Image 1 (cartoon, helix red, strand yellow):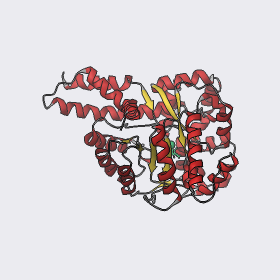
Image 2 (cartoon, helix red, strand yellow):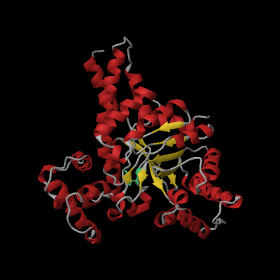
Image 3 (cartoon, protein in one colour):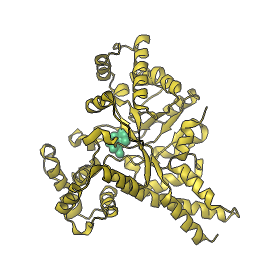
Image 4 (cartoon, protein in one colour):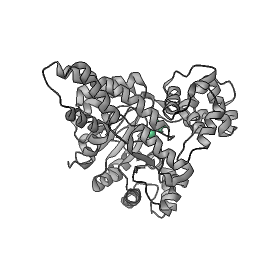
Length: 413
Ligand code: FIX
Ligand code: ZN
């Protein structure tokens, strides 16, 4: 095969391989309005709001006091009309609109709104998934969210494309409040982590894992997370979460490096990043060879150590370019590094989509970057005399787009 033919084959394979998106903030359609979609939600996405505040001069509270459509109008004006939309979050809005067949160059927000108002939601969901070529996605589900809890309790018919993950940040990071919630729900927990309390936390985790049919249990952690430690967080992980995950054979997903509310005035857009001490995670993983761990780190500077950790521990699966690392320059760098250090045994990307149409741009943009890295790697392979078969490329890309994750879920340790 010539290099050009190889390039084309890689491009075609990456474009046509369906993705299993392993972390999003979307909801099963049965959750109704909680599944966000449409132009206004795309514009008030917290990535865009953070960028718009770079230009706004109005008081923060004034913006938050406005109805969503007015907030969206202000973001549109600041990021698309008064400045060129060059950032990744802005380009993303345009990619999604363009792929949906909308004429972005008109810069006509009312026309965009009218188009979305004409869409039938369920058909639109199918269309977005098809355009993104996403066949399955994992949602982020919190038993601490009142609206969400009510839907789970009532029960609903699951859409087979949407799987769930049990998110437990409040349990591990805000024990006083979470404990009160558990007590209200009939779990006999006290303020101290006695044997009885830990057993009740495990009963809570078991109930929700079963109710959601959760694929994994997930938490995001601040840069100063320490383990082992006497903190409630470390103790709950050690005594409740890890035994629970081992019992149910579900991974514990950790997302190190987020500094919540560094600017609370920005609300959801106000979180920042810090460097984590990954030694804490390494110690935890080494001490629990029977547990499975998923990790995506927020700080660029943590990526290399995380990759080396994955070389050492088969019970660790590295995934995604999370949030501030989900930009072309870093996706390129991180994907390259991972391929070079751990071959095909990782999941290069997840979308983190909060708004349905974001699936389109997040995957379009990543597909292009992953294609470029793979082309280079297969070319380098060809230069050694190794001949690659189309079916082998297909197999490899499937692994990167959800297959390696599935294998990880299924493997016995
Ligand atoms: O904690 C998370 O799962 C983060 O992805 C979110 O908190 C964050 O707001 C986000 O949407 C990043 O992409
Ligand atoms: Zn997320």
